[in-house]
Length: 217
Image 1 (cartoon, rainbow, N blue to C red):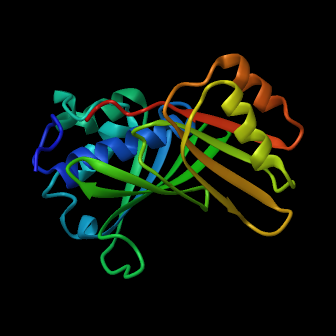
Image 2: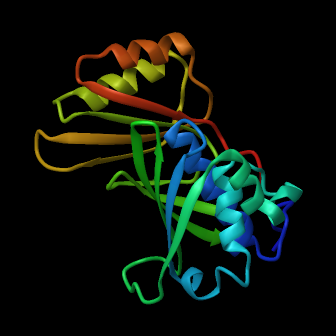
């Protein structure tokens, strides 16, 4: 299998981990000030030997998969003021073998992202803030947190269609009936700032995060 252009040793344990960190930083909106990092299963057993610890820190600093600074990412994190801690859980049978959970803070904002490294540098963002996500970060992605209002999904899809945005995948997760819901929408093209601002102004929308495609593959 042809993998990504990367700093090794492993496309799954290094490059994929960098990409998960980069996506989490985009969801947060900035390089985090603090990061709690939990590795699961295979990651938990091998993260030091395969450089997954340096890789995740590099991703949180928004380094690309082929950035030579990955090797010294701990030093760059210190310079950037990023404080972090590692935890490992070696036997989580319900989770993908290569899973990492990130709890990130910057200012008053805090998020939780769970990512899975699929091999060859490919990833799946499994959840964001407890909502099931399942997006690849290879397309333009909107994360829309909104009240669980009847017709809201159809209306947002119509707004995107009128902006010539073709929806590739959509996953909707909610905490309960008429509670907070989260839409994860992957699109083939970018969205205009005016359209994004309009969607943010909708009374039932609480937050919209735009995640650009990760072109580091």
